[in-house]
Length: 326
Length: 288
Image (cartoon, rainbow over all chains, first blue to last red; front, side, top):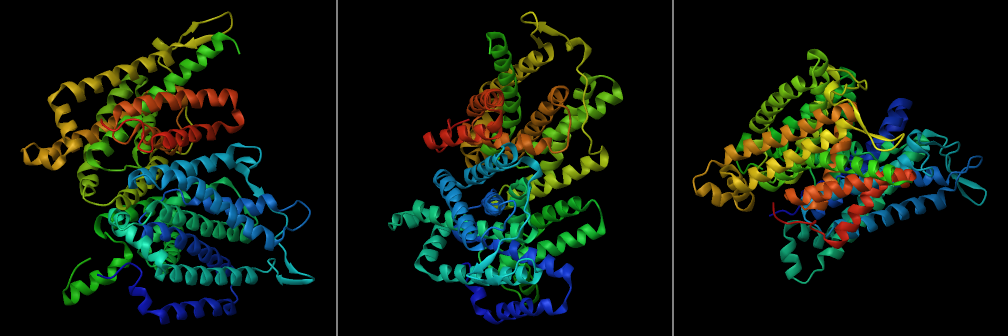
């Protein structure tokens, strides 16, 4: 039986080609699409971080937006009114604090069963939402507009000029590539194999002597840290944060991205982010009532295409040449 | 703060808690018996409140609106169970989360198309519009007391239904072992459909009777859903008793939190949930 994540290792060329296309895209010189694809690449990082939980560890989190939002808020709150913040200090801080928040929540939630986990992650995410929404320190529902993009200087040399959308684009692309590489490395490591073992059969892993609680907590913390990275980049791109970044719609949408692409492969989650953005653009162009179309599409997808869009290929093949249906 | 205002806050907290119990009990029953995690449950509350608003303004009577609304919400529950949820019993929680998330988007948008996106008030029925004087300048509205009374009555009826009737026996049996119930020749599908419709009706009913107090607004379903998830998680998934206890606790904590810690009001409830989870990771009660 193929473990999740393995089929895609057979297509490194597809990943390289996609990377090359993304690297060459700015040559087209289309500011609108440059910004859109930057956004989608950041969402892809976010979706991949959730895939570590959903597709690899088997933990369905419905509160993942909280850590995305914390990463974003760290940049906004650390940006002084009259100066740019330093990229080199705020980025690790954002990732670190998102990881810390995920760790603290994880202590509570990773020891409970799957349904509990869904509800408890959602509830804790809502707590963070209200933390930024209701309190003085989060500046309420209006959010925070940053006057400056962070400065990334080493000595006198300005390494990244985030005033230029292309720089942001390439930084997002670089982050996407790094995170994808890191996660795929992780997947093949003993740690990643243990996580997959937990997804397949936690009881058995425990009886083999694995402390599954610690593995799950580590996975949850790591996923929170990567979501924080995505949130940081998102705040960097738009120069603006508000509590909606932590809303459970955001958590639901990112879960949808993971499912669209097929959980357990990371590249699938990234593709899901692109698919979701495309779907949203098409629906929004078609009607003001696009939420109705989106909702109906989700319902029909679950009813008639269990396994997500990722299973369509296998279904198609099964219909043509026979063989096992997914 | 003097005694009378404390009493008022306590009554408000209990009333809010009892209302939450009505919504959360349906959520916990549907989970405990059918194993379905239904995120759209809060939307049924929203649907109920909007039905109360639309029908009460059309007929001029909240009572008529409630009667009509209960009938429609039972029908809605039956229809949704038949078309959507019956297909989810064998699926994993991920599919259930997704489908019900999609359903939320559909119901929200339908609400926006059929009614509108404004905030509406629903008048308190004239018979219950008065208030009871407590001190010289403090009084308590009759309708809120009536609300608590209605919730208590319904809670009592649910207890009788589950503990004392044949259907209740089937519900309890189905919660503990559905295969066994099926192999004994009982129609578990019918039980499921009834329980689901009951859950929808309870949530919608709570929305209807809460409408005069809370007003009717877009997004009200989401808010209730998440608080009810907290209640269910604290009470123990599937436990109606646990839901009652947790709902009262949340209602009182939330109300007093808003009075004493207005800055952190939204967060207090979740901290209480964290404390309960630390103490009992599986919630307060295990069984129905």
